[in-house]
Image (cartoon, rainbow, N blue to C red; front, top):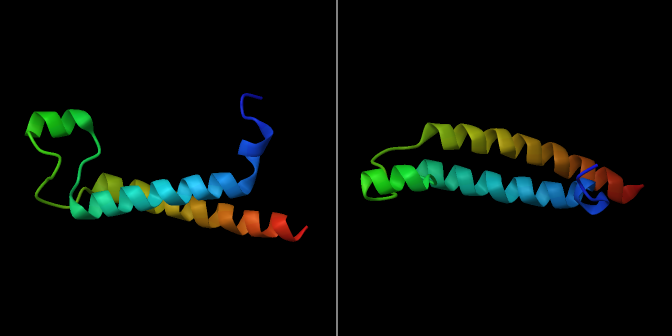
Length: 78
């Protein structure tokens, strides 16, 4: 497989998913676009409203992170 064994472990995956979910949720809720193209076209990275697509993806990643953390905690007890 293309993933190394440590990357398939739930703890690093849970940390990565949590960090990305937090980034997307905070940026989307505050109106900060993460797209370089959108920022260069608009002349600024800030929009006037919430970026719902980033918020939705952040929520989905938060749910994935919760599942991964649950799996990680179970794997530590075995």
